[in-house]
Length: 269
Image (cartoon, rainbow, N blue to C red; front, top):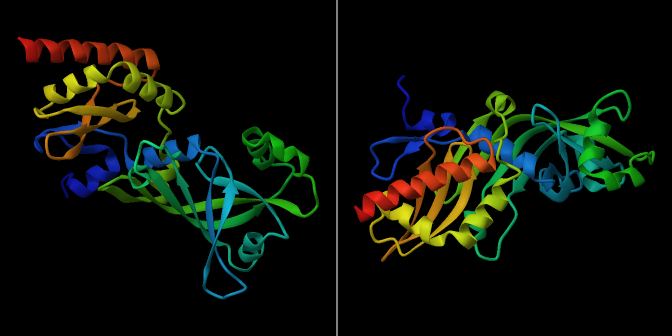
């Protein structure tokens, strides 16, 4: 089978603004790993023992191991722990932080599907991983009723906003690497939106949105960035790729400065 649109969802490609060219993007697996790495807690869904078959949702802090498997610390008194003891299946929903300026349905989120297995407090990496991510847990981690569980991820479902969604196989999720800009992305986005709104508008028009009236950067990764562009009659997403990988904030700045220069020359010349 040739690389069709379904394969592109999982290998980092999407149609360009004109629908003809192929613009590289991180795969859904990479995006899922990036989001899970940046976040610290999610919503855990377990199979409720008290009302057999009903889902039970609870807030769950977690840490990740090098395969992207969530490690959780739970008390035997908690309902979700009692549920997992009876049925180890569960799902973990993690969403990017909300913002007053954005529609929550436009935020990225990922749901992991799998099962939870007990892991020892001592002699493994669970304790160190968890306390590094949640240092306050040191006050209760040694209570006898607390223990660690690790989620074996069977599949992930990634939603990147409106119209961007798809399943990720467990193996692909485990092998994916978080984006190198994951820690810097928020500051890059805030800086560009606050100080370079005119440049984003220029870039939008350069990339074919001729009636662009406002443009906002919504995400950035090593391969490019996403804009939300307001036109005369509609709002649309626009992906602008980098000419090469940008693995640092400085490299993002350099390439965007060059793109703005090229856009200005093209539009004004």
